[in-house]
Amino acid sequence: MQFAKRFLDKFSSLIVTVLSCFDRVIFKGYLPFHNEGELNSWVDYTLRIRRIDFVTQLEKRSEELVDHAKAFAEKASRPYERRQGRFRKEQFIQDIIRRDNLTQGLVAVLCTQETCRSIKLAYADKRPRLIFAKRPQRVLYYYFLDRDFGLMYIRLETWFPYTIQVYVNGHDWLARKMLGRKMGFVQRDNAFTQLDDPQQAQQIADQFAQLNWVKQLSKWARLVNPHIDKGGWLHGKDYYWVTEQAEYASDVIFKDRSKLKDLYPRLLDHAVVNFSASDILTFLGRKLTGNFLGEVLTDCKKKREPGARVKHRVKENWIKMYDKFGLVLRVETVINSPREFRVRRKRIRKGQPTMVWCPMNKGVTNLPSYQRVCRAANDRYLNALSVVNDPTPAYQQVADLTESKTHQGRRYAGFNPARKDDVRLFQAVLSGAHELRGFHNCDIRESLHGVVRDPTERRRRANAVSRMLKRLHVRGLIARIPRTRRWRVTSRGHSLLGAMIRLHYHGIPLAA
Image (cartoon, helix red, strand yellow):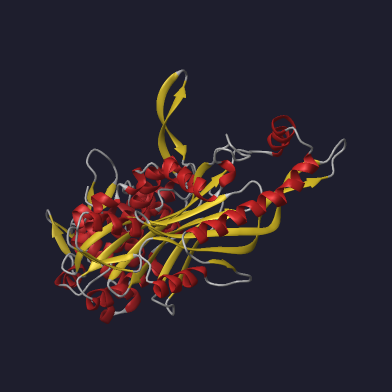
């Protein structure tokens, strides 16, 4: 199925192409000390040293990591910088790249002071006990212009348990791959404004999630932490890797700035005014139920540099829309808490392997699932925006909806964009909650009137809704889903009902 088909068909005269790609991805590596009991047993029975001596040795181990970083930078003839206080690391690194005209290899090593998870010795009944606790420590940032991944960094905490964080950018990786295949493109920052072969670019972008990330991340870990290498005191212990944060962007590239400039304010207003909590949860593949515990927030910033954006937050995950350079419309899903999503996975049930829906976890091998979930969310979001009007002749048909229509000898009244009840019906029908499976009569009834307990009153209102839906149906605005009692909104319905809503809230100048 074509990505965001309704949106792309609607605005095809304005759009060049669309590209979906991972943007910012942050991985974290943890040594396999899952709890304090496991840590204390390892010190007592594997290292066979006193717990107080183990803590004392950590100062020496920290110095070894710092000395390794200094030697690493010196060998590459690159700077090692010790920085205190708050400063913009990305800007600092970009300045070094421009100053030294770098294209590949180590850029610099930064050493900062941060408060991170470590261990300390705590009082216990019989003997002191090692517990996990936060403490200030030196943190090393290795910045590279990698041959395959472009600008990236590896962050190493210098106190046990030596947690590692790796940052890469999917757009930079894709740019390097396209350069290797001699494909033409124009890249600005982390976006592409021109692509000679969009289809092949998309095929390459889809391969990012399939890389052997465990092997690649483990290779980088050994580069900066000699303790886990052969001969190191942690030899035999290896990191397990998780996806700490993943951003997946769908970029709609417009033909020129004027095309997006006219349309973007309308998309922004529609997202803020019309997308409810139920809609936003539906975009992210969920349904609003009484069991949902959390907040669904929408935040719009119009006076923002470099441009206006809207962000819809559901707990720790969000979906946002903004423009890049006035030429690219970006819809981006960000996952911090993957267990809010469910994916199909093979499990043993009653002794038999069965495909069941399970919460998605952070393991790095689940990156393909991240890609599927995020791309589906971006697809639903863009398709929900397809109801927004554009300056095309289709919106002149709005006037036809205000007139009565005769079908099979029966007359059906028209709709009035100034009438609040009609507009509420349009909004209920266009709700993003129906994007996945369509809607029933009861869905529209509850949206318009709430839950009604009295059977007689419920039947009366159901009949009234049936008549409303029939008025939409005879005009080709909704259609029955075959072999079900559900309805779906047609392409004509998406465009015309969206225009009616705009006409009600913003008046004729913005709806035309």
